Length: 120
Image (cartoon, rainbow, N blue to C red; front, side):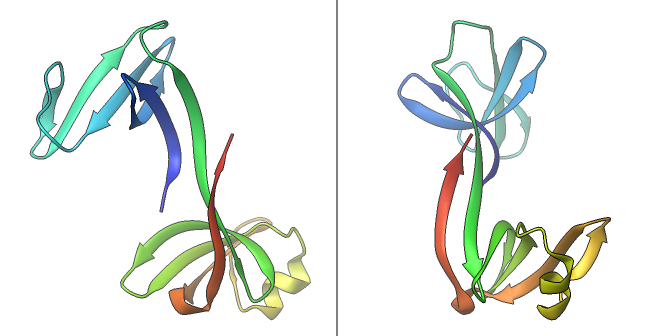
């Protein structure tokens, strides 16, 4: 389940973090030009013009007929954030108010449908 920045570079897509006008890209394998920052995590900093595209990717879904963002996965459960904007619906679904107007909860993955990635 992806929720974050990605960068296209040399025909591949990498998890990324914007850093001013540069971008840090990450991989889990030892690759030429990348520096190991911790075991199994490698980074490379790219300057403007060195990469093709920066996008924000979110995993979206439907649960009990309502729209959600998928935030995390744990075993057979998904952590979801309601995007419908209606507090009575969020309360009816038994979601917790994570922050003012932000409702989240865990749902069995088998009950979740229409999972797709949305690129911004």
